[in-house]
Image (cartoon, rainbow, N blue to C red; front, side):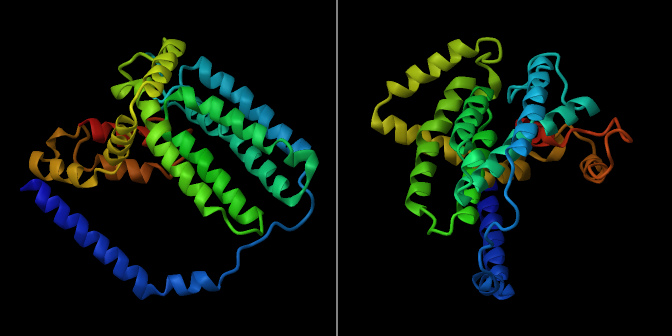
Length: 275
């Protein structure tokens, strides 16, 4: 009964969303807006080099603090002011990649020639973390840079192929690598778990590849099942007290150096799902 009720609420929500989108006229306005092309002065290599230098120095600190992996190493904390700052600055190389990408599509060889090598380096950095979101971020960055930076038609077939490969190969590989909730101990045995994931990926039948991929993707969009669990089991399973989620949301706008005790918003989703 709970699942039927959840599906009904989800279906009703999607109908309302689609109706609102069509009534708003946003789609007609969007079709009238031309894609902006990069203009202005040339983007210089020193800017990219500076972002990479600061970002990678911060990433080394991220590793030393035990915050590199998706499931943090035991004893590490991502809630302190310093840890949050380190995590934020560790994203700077992605900004550098985006700038290099724009330069690449503008024909600026001095900076643009580093675009694809930097993409490869970002993938190599992100894959051992066991965090799907980092891989998705790189893919979205490449798609956005290609869409706005190149006046040629967007390669939708290539994009669709990349989505299928991520769904059927990359995401199941990450699941094999890190295990359920990081239970494989991949933080301490990274090379061993990578080899295990590679072997498990290469020795699967085509039916297993498709089945595991679809199952893994579906588990990330199981909103109806989550809603059913909430409606049947009640909110008492969630560890936060009444009103605490609202206070966390308000505290998100207050700098951590002022409100050092505020919760880490990145942990709320995992805490809720595990409950």
